[in-house]
Length: 233
Length: 233
Image (cartoon, rainbow over all chains, first blue to last red; front, side, top):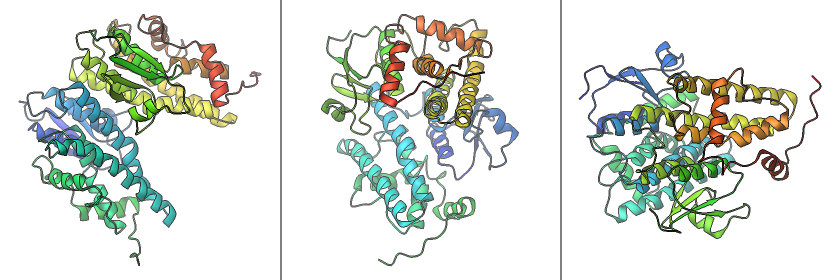
């Protein structure tokens, strides 16, 4: 066990990347100091801890900084290796989880950001198509788990890919709410829809997932999201 | 040991990403079938093996596909764990190598691509500045290794970050050649300059690094690189 104060996390509550680190720490039952770092401005501590990107999250372990959310999750898994595993032990299964987690960050979340920023019906429709297409691909990946009777990508418990994708659920819901639509559709992606419910209800997750209303207000204030006009059809 | 034919690599010789997988297989002394996949067109085998990205490299191990170069390198390290280690065993050192490898891909190599595509003096100068700035950051990271008397980022032998950065050396040289300049400067980045020499001379590397002249001709033909006019100052 760590002594109090030896693990610190620099974060900002609306960040999906910070949520990842918090869920991983919760899974391992690691006691940590959470240091809220609303940006801007960048604090001296953040600047010193992550001089390359100047971004949260940063995990400080005995004052040594670890940056980048998925690298932090892997570090937590490896350092506190006696706790429940986050990454599978089999090299092939690990590679598959790394592959889909990278897909979620590099492709799928970018399409969600495009949707959030899109202006005009055509751009919005294209972005919605990309977000939904990505979810269909992830549904296929999930089906392999659920056919084995598993509730999560990681098996019976949440793992690396669950954390990677699940951390975005708050922002997915904000985008659904702001656009009066369902992106995570029970009919087309039934596995993922059930998974999202189980994920958010998990003990390691529920205390760190932001409330959708609060996140929506934050999005409006910080990024200038605007309520669209109500759809007429 | 694997039986002949159980490990296959789908690749294309000019790809830095394919080189990564080949170096990792060489380090572990794994015998493999190399299947050249010049693209386009995308072969049926590649389409079936990597339906999400349809890109090389793909490692086929007992016909199970593993995609994405750094994920392949990590898989090779973990599956053939009795060979020389590619990633360090210490979780913090692993996290540092993952961090810089992600920096190399997400930031530095993109600046090199911007330089290759840049048109006009101003855009070119800005891209050169970014490439050199990134190398200065990597020099700092390397200094920590060389102060410990190590020849490589990975220590006395090449490791994960060496492979991540070293795989781009061919394309770095092509860009130097095409622009009549030194990007990897012995005066400003002496550690990296010496490292690049040691890396390219390493037994696991030298047989898979493309010749610069051949790579330059390929770049001209495939991407329409043009010889710039000789600088007058």
